[in-house]
Image 1: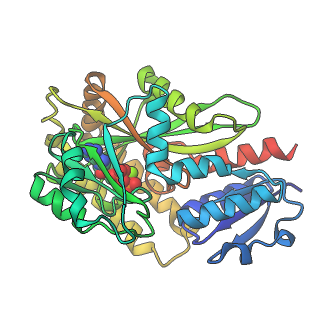
Image 2 (image 1 turned 30 degrees about the horizontal axis):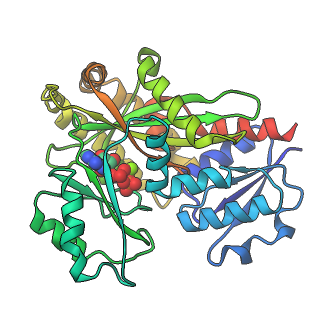
Image 3 (image 1 turned 90 degrees about the horizontal axis):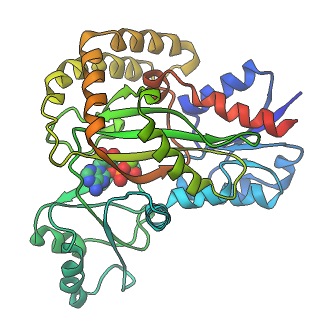
Amino acid sequence: MNRVGLVYDKLTSDEEEIILEAERRGFQLRYLFVKNPVQAYLPSSKLIDLPVVFNRCESKRRALEAGRIIEDNGIPVVNPFKVEYLCADKIETLKLWFNNGINTPRWVYASFTGRDGFLDSEIEDIADEIEKLGYPIVVKPTMGSWGRGVVKIDDRCKLIEALRNSHPSPINPDGFFAQEYVEKPGFDLRILVGLKPRGDIKVLCGIARISPSPKEFRTNTHLGGIPLGLKLDENSKIVKEAVDAGKILLNGCKWGVIALDAMPDARGVDYSMIYRYVPECNNLFQQIRRLVEENKQYRYRSWKHLLEDAFLKYKSSEAYIKMEAIVHEILEFCKLKWHEANSRFDYAVNTRNASGFNPAKFYLDIAEDLAY
Ligand SMILES: Nc1ncnc2c1ncn2[C@@H]1O[C@H](COP(=O)(O)OP(=O)(O)O)[C@@H](O)[C@H]1O
Ligand SMILES: [Mg+2]
C-alpha cells in the first residue's frame, strides 16, 4: 500500500481534502501533528519508511523547521524546503522575481538598525528613501498572511509614525517593508502552479478575489474578498507569466505546488463597472460564508457537499456570470504585478469551488509519482 505523511499544526478543510483524496486513492496516511519545538514532534522514527511527506503547517516558522527536518531525513517533502524558504519571505520572493525579469511592484526594504526597531535619529532619512515610491504606499510584514498588518499610508506624517512604531515581531522579524500602491481594478489574482516529478510546471487553476467595497484595498477572502473562478484557457498571457514566475521559485526542484498572487495594474483602465455587480455577488456569497460559519464545528467531510451545492448556485447566478465577463474583459487591459507566493495556501472552500479544480488531487499525483 502507498504511504504518505501529513505534517500539520492544525487540521483544516484543506488538509481534510488531502485526507479524503488519499483515502480515495488507497494511500495509507501517517498523521504527523507538530507544535513547538517541531524537532520534538518529528523524530526520525516517525518519518521512517515514508516515500513522501506533505508539509501543511500553517505557521510559516513551523513549516520551515518541519521542511528542514524532513529533508535532513532524506525524505521528499511537498513543498521542498527551498520553496518553503522562498515563499516564507516576501522580500526573497520579490528579489528573485525582479532579478529574473518578472514584473513586480516597486518596493523599499529597510533593515532594523536597533534591537527594537529604528533609532529615532535615522527615521527621517529612511522616510526620504521610502517616499521615492510615491504616495500612497503599502506597508506590510515580510512573513505575514491573511492581510494582517497590511496598511495603506497616504502621507509623510503617517509614514514617520509607522516607522517609529515598527518593531521586530514573529511575522516581521527584520525590517520595514514598503511597496508602491498598485491601483487594482477592484480585484487581484491567485494562480496555482504545480510541478510533478514526471512532468513540466503547469498552471493548475486560478481565481480573482474581488474586494466587496472600493474602500477596502485588501482582497484576501479572509477579509471579505469574493472569489471568482478564472477561465485561464482564454488568457494565455496570465498562464505564461504564472509559469515563468513559478519556474523561478521551483528552479532546481522536481516537484512542488504553490499559489502565486498578482495584482492587475489598472491605471488608465475604466473598471468602474466591476462595482455594478459586487453588491449582489457579495450578497449571494454571504450565504456561503454563513454556511461555512454554521458548520465550522462539524467535520468538513460531513458538510462539504452543502458547500459545493451552494457554490454551484452562486456560480450560476446572473450577477456572477456578468461579473465573470467583466473581470475577464478588464484583465485584457491590465499588466500584472506579481508580488507573493504561498507554499501552504488554503483552497478547499474558495479556490477549489470557484475554479473547479481540486489541488488535493495534485498533492496526491505527486505522491503517486514518488511512490513508484
Ligand atoms: N502594493 C499593493 N498595492 C495594492 N494593494 C495591495 C498591495 N499589497 C497588498 N495589497 C492588497 O492587500 C492584500 C494583502 O496583501 P499581501 O501582500 O498579499 O499580504 P498577505 O500575505 O497578508 O495576504 C493583497 O491581496 C492585495 O489585495
Ligand atoms: Mg496575499
